[in-house]
Length: 134
Image (cartoon, rainbow, N blue to C red):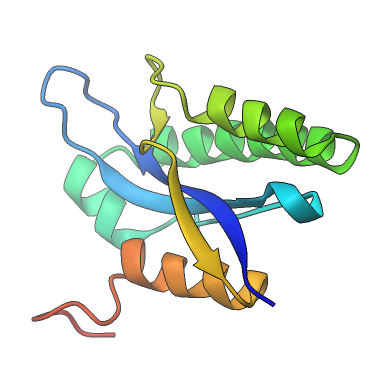
């Protein structure tokens, strides 16, 4: 059975003035079945640390993101469908932060776990992109 999920790409953006960012995670929510999961990159992700040259800042930002996502995940378990959508909308609202979220997107899925992995592989690990190794 297929159902609609919402997802957002987690982005690390340490320098507001340049507006540069790196995709560092995926958040996937299935309001109809009361589920929200996420997957974040390792705190020592070489590509990000080399580009931004801020290893300790990235590690700290990822811990903060994980804490925030854990809170929303816990709220999802106790919420109704409309509340889950609102939690996700609040999570992905534009904020001034080192960790930001892409605009909320929707996707029709058959397997929640497979979709989370596929999205992570595409947007974070960059597998399947032309000219990329994976």
